[in-house]
Length: 226
Image (cartoon, rainbow, N blue to C red; front, side):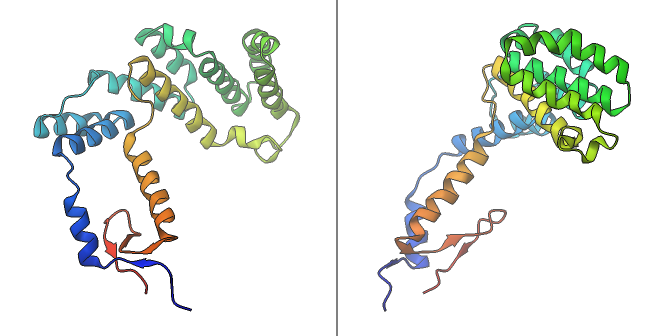
């Protein structure tokens, strides 16, 4: 049975692509947005000088933001909290969930190094009052404190809390909160555009055979299978 899909040749597809006009300034802003959001301060500064693209935040603040993110990723949660308060004390005030997750991560780090008495005292003084006001927080506290009940905490039902991926999750929340406080997008635009491209290609696959991009690192067009 013959395919009902429209077939678009490479020549026709490339001609259509050439008809799409994208300004270099817009592309440069996308690149700068990615560099700033992801914290590549040196690359952002070089790109600013080479392309003349300006950014909406002081590049010097990127270094501070990355220091806070790295502090969480390395388990130095109190250092991150102190630096955030030094940078802008309203960030944690306006983001109680981020603050709670930082405190939770600090509790996890105490449990990780076996400071049981200190962990219990910290949970009672800093986390329990927040759990009384927020059921979601209370459940997270219970899961975290439950780590103390297991001899092999890393392999218990809540062992994922001790995984480095949990540190990264908390660090990303910190990064997003700081960016938002600086009136900057918390997520880079390029990954979102790539997801949109993938979705668009998937939708188009149902209607046409056309030169598709499968390798996004090269953006090479692959001839349609007919």
